[in-house]
Image 1: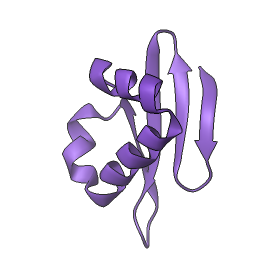
Image 2 (image 1 turned 45 degrees about the vertical axis):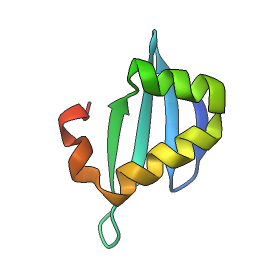
Image 3 (image 1 turned 90 degrees about the horizontal axis):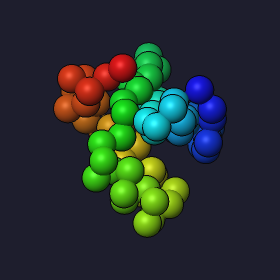
Length: 73
């Protein structure tokens, strides 16, 4: 697995073979991470919008991590 991008205390983007994995720091008092594989559509957004899209997606995960638990790796 190769780290592609990092925003300390926010997110890390990894490449694992053909998959892109986003690991997001969540929580306030207790910090935990949620790692998800980007969908094909999310990968396309990342390819066109770059890191701006990751900031957006990480914010969505941080704001409501429960919505991403089923995608957790």
